Picture (cartoon, one colour):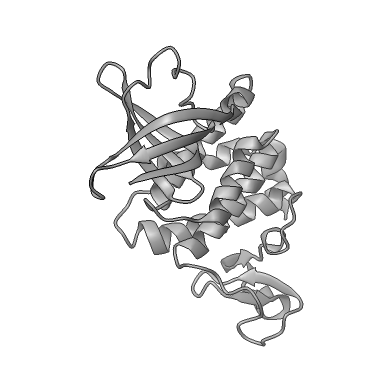
Length: 248
């Protein structure tokens, strides 16, 4: 069966003289890995940079076989936007291993796809970190690990939510959580409210929370290693951002 779709390049590994094994995050089929026989030809050489958005067709004789990717066309040259900004390029290469580990083959997830696109389109480091915080938060739901943030787990109230319990993944209001604030995560207001302009402190706190839940309930549960690039994500917060985050 032949499928036609669009997707972002996540990875490309050389195979033989002119071929690549390419992994795409596609709109309708989630993560797709396929073989491109003429990937390193003069015509195709620039297509397979991480972040580029491509149109493609894919086919496989049997469902369990690796697909062949063909008729590839560049839709958005997003990699070019990062080539002149080494720090942005470095951040993308730090984020992509998490995408590769979290996403399932042949499983559509439009919300994560849309958020990945915002990461690759982002104009600066803060915007990229913001969208990546959204990505990990949505990934918890995608993996069946969604947090319960609608009301306080103790009182049932919906106002004054300030914390999230690391034990239960449930929201806690300020009055209840204040005595234990150093053992709780900050409530992720900006992702819940879909605010695209959070402070560095808010981004830092959300990523600290999502890393904990992803590691404890996904990576550790499946005996997987958290990508080293994710463990080093904090280096993209400059001194000013870290001071702001620590003061919050």
